[in-house]
Length: 315
Image (cartoon, rainbow, N blue to C red; front, side, top):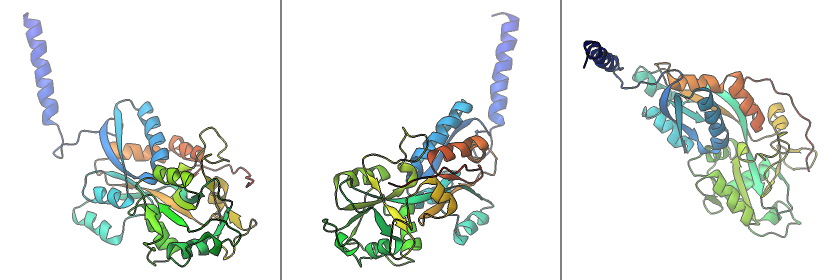
């Protein structure tokens, strides 16, 4: 070994030791655009979140986002336990949850990302395509059990209502916003595990109604976002007591934007990243022009990107 080689090796070793000594006390080494982190996201947003991750990682090759698609309850619990520093949900933190962070000298941010909606889906063989929020409420709390009670001409029998998961944001929305706090009927309501399982169940069950997130409806072959998946039918929903074609709307982007679709809900990024590292970098991308355009193309309503509303015509 020459003297020059000896000094080069020594310099490299000192460099490695110096880098190790600069490692943060919390053990985290990710930066604004590099490193690997885990995030938590409500499973009902999996299609759009995964698309955002794919584009972000393409722009920043040194960054890795590992999503954990779970229930909204679990996503917020993971954030509270500091197991993740970013969660995507349909609600902001409660006063008690925020106080828990503050007691540990953390000051999380809540950023609105988009407007989503809950879609009601039925089997292709089901001719019933209109329903009111009032009738949805009656089904959820057990006052109505058969299709004939909401549509006298129906040839179907009992209504089978299915959700994705008992701890999901869709169930919480149903209880808080549709049932106005009344408990769901355990007899007539069934919870599976994922939105895809709800779609599969409804596609093979003629008398079922499924409740899923709107971004699961997208027909990937239709760039205009004016059609839905082929294997199921999407119901039109009315805020009036009696649903008619004139007062009922499907969860098209335009109807979400104008507030005409009655089952709309917000999407939030909950961020607890005091180091302003990769969680902040990804959150900034989500709310940037590029990230918001991805949301726009998915059929949801972005929080910051201007929307060019396309006139829709229901079936």
